[in-house]
Length: 426
Image 1 (cartoon, one colour):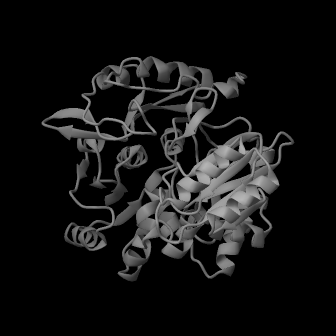
Image 2 (cartoon, helix red, strand yellow; image 1 turned 45 degrees about the vertical axis):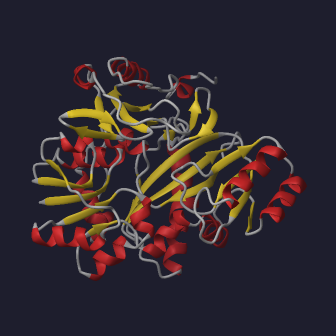
Image 3 (cartoon, one colour; image 1 turned 90 degrees about the vertical axis):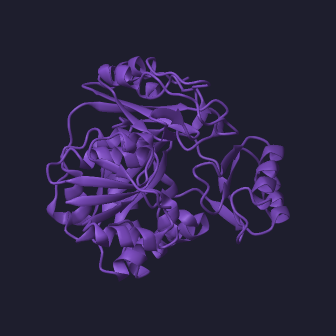
């Protein structure tokens, strides 16, 4: 079987490599892919854009590709799943209607309230001055969110009124898009964030291992939000009892609410949760696709062939599967360009990947490009160095030993990925 993966990040490289572990998968094509997929045996990059649905369709038909897997949220929000489903082609990912769960935070919030899903109190505004007045009324800390897609960067936890007003101004200036600008002003919650990536075929919903992402650029979760600086799985804060509650109180009611709206949702339902100090799970956001970098950590522990699960979702057979996992833990440490998530330079020569992999880690490429047979940086998040171990401590140690082998000008990483789970609260 041949598979086409849409996207060019670390998540897509991880998906491609996981698929190629199976003897059933003959070849993986990536649109457009990156330097890692260009150098992975069995992978081939295609010079197509992720929103070129006709171009992708032609390639799929001519090359007899049996399955399309969509990595990023943008093509899903533009209706790539609808396009392929209408042409009776197998595609993994929700329709445009389902993708609203990520492309519109206000739509998602309305769905959650309708379904009785625990989530922070929020108000939606189309006017900046009204939003600012609400901030003054509510006080700080408070959370400011851009309503649409923002690549993980449209959220500000404001500790002062001035900071909240600045975030509101940024959104209404069109920083995260100029169409139908809206802002959510949301109650601030304390606790630990957890990522629950679940698979669904529209009938059954099955969670993968719980993961914890590290969004802030700085150690100790300080500084600006990024697309994610690292992740580990499984997150020990999610006990079997808590996972049962998440299944019954969040995942199943969300799927039922989508069904009630006549949305046939097949793909990943990703719940970004806050586990409060009292142990209560509350939904901060939903995403309509695999998380990045959580996917790198989670798939490293998956034992069931990925293509079996993806096909089961497409064909509404997910209820037939009990997902199998390897023992132990996995950690992904992101190596970023200096200056990220602000401005940064590209084209920096990368060395040491072979040495890193010799340490027992897997290096997933995110923002890389192969130029004149040389690997160079091509994004803010450049690499995801991922390692597994029988314990989380072993996985962390192995990951950072590999990180230390890799060099490029301006390279930056957080040194505390996963350490909170070991009792380090700083």
